[in-house]
Length: 465
Image (cartoon, rainbow, N blue to C red; front, side, top):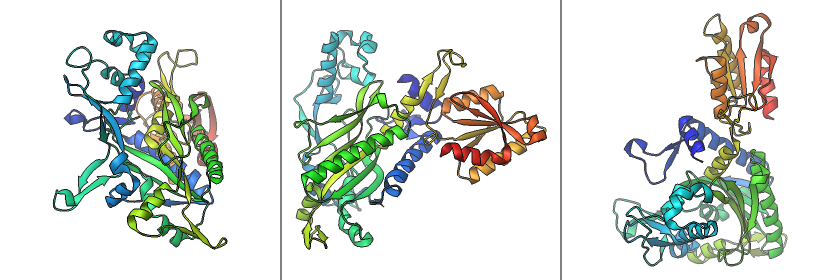
């Protein structure tokens, strides 16, 4: 994991937030390549599920909503995690995370005072180690557990008293439920249909960690899919969205052997759910959730109907009756998808594939690669840069993200692009002046072929398709 984190900073995928001030509580900024990677993930999700499905419409709701939203949804009273605090160092941790680490240690036969020398054996990260070893020395001396609300509180208006309290949204779902009636009235959709949204959510996590996997500010891609209110219909669409979610990750290049579906047992289910499954990925720090698919029944709409006093039922003209739809919710994390994609694509050569030992290639699927094509002139003179820049301009005009590089040897330029995941490189050389062809080099196979420079755009577009 450390090598991936190092690559992310060195090449501009992810930076520590507020780094010039020493950073800030597991917050991260996505750099030029990271922001483009995230945009490609979100664009593909939107293209697949909003444009590609017949019965999904989009939404972009406010981050700060009326506080009654969170009263109705249950977040004010029940959106909590069990917290313990060390009486010696005053660090705070989630009880279940501490217990998980202790269980892992016990299964590995490792005592607390031997943890530092056993990280590799247990597959433990530094964040996990900190749950066992106290910075004040020895083991932590934990307090009794108490419930901690994860909502970020803020104030709206010119005063900062209780009358102006508001909250940063902890999920994107509620903005969709608040607009259920608006969407029906303005678009004439009817069940089964979905409302999709991509946006930021905020949770005051007690123990964030594992790089960008668990942070206090994160981005979600979420659909609330409204259906007729019966368990059989819910189960049918629940199974449909599980397969669709898994398909989405596979299409972005994540290896099938690293993906799994885990159904929640009854004790783990949210009180409103009649069935939830997680799409999980095998990270270097362990198997963890990428996204979840939940059968939320009519809980959210019924709660908002109750608290608002408004009728939110759908009128079915064919049946001549009204009902509150059931909901199936596929919710996927953007940041976690990015981390899984980077992890799966990371390849350090052992020297047997034609690359130098230790050389890194990021084998990103072209769908999500931040840069699709890099264009090089062989040298900085003889008219080669001008031809190369013309090719760059044509590719960019076609909407293909392209990078121009004339610095260093061509071999070094290839290696730089391999390390950031660029699928194809084009080199303009002296033969280009004679026959209007250039060298197209493939990242993964390292094969090279000559192609007519007038056909470069169509060739790349074909490969992307």
